[in-house]
Image 1 (cartoon, rainbow, N blue to C red):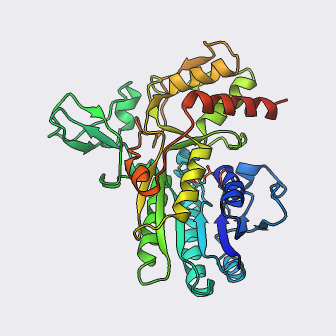
Image 2: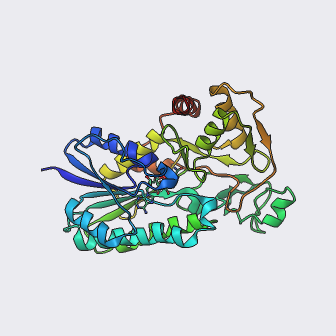
Length: 362
Ligand SMILES: NC(=O)c1ccc[n+]([C@@H]2O[C@H](COP(=O)([O-])OP(=O)(O)OC[C@H]3O[C@@H](n4cnc5c(N)ncnc54)[C@H](O)[C@@H]3O)[C@@H](O)[C@H]2O)c1
């Protein structure tokens, strides 16, 4: 008998590649995709994605509880990947209720649908969570003590001070350190808070149920297929589009914001493995490359692969609320529990992204 796998947000950047990876890795499964083809991601009046006939694609919204219940009643999934979400950090400040509706209430609707209509067959829900829940993330002081960076204030940033404040007892010098689940959550944006709520709701509601939750906290995912339309997420896709349009890049702060960029197929591989592994209830892992790179460095790589002048940028000194200064994942838990390690290095990944972006612009 085929086992049913249900993916919310399966028409998106990560979800659509997950569909193809599951077709390859889970041959005895039937894949169901629910996605509302969000215009901000897919454009107005978008057509359903091209999936092979055996994939059941349903256009619908996770905020519509009654519709979601009907779909779950049909699919009766053994395995669920929850990816549907509003994803823009900056945008989330102006659209608090929408972010809560989709990310928090949408997750609540999914939980109730599985409980009430899933037929008691669901064994696992894998959440696409975010490193955003760490806020400014981990810092290590000269005595080896780990601290969470404190939120940066607009008052200081407006004066050009982009440094991350630390608690008074930190012994300087202090340097950024890879974040892992031992760090207490410190979300620094509405988006981050809603992503943390998703984790909590899924973990808590799994108690006493047939299913458990696995949480994968992704760093910055990049690669071919990330929406070139969405101005709120995917800095490398946004940069690629601007460079191909002949524009100069505006690089915020002093160019030294650092991110951990992880290639989309590596992330998809972590999802597939999480779906297959026998893990503890609520197992939580960080998924990234494990290396931080500055926005300026990565922008220069893009300029190289897109054959643009290496001066196609301006360091503007502008800043955005909610942007954190430094992000990097400690990926040892995923290596240990999932036998997962990233396979695609940054140069290879940026080359792939550049080739794809070029064909999109032909
Ligand atoms: N891309 C990243 O860098 C990154 C980093 C951390 C976490 N994540 C998480 O991974 C998940 C997938 O992200 P992505 O980069 O593929 O984004 P994406 O925007 O490409 O995909 C999200 C998909 O969800 C759909 N969707 C949005 N709202 C919906 C709703 N109300 N009902 C049904 N479908 C809806 C969209 O149409 C889209 O196809 C998200 O949960 C995101 O928070 C992504």
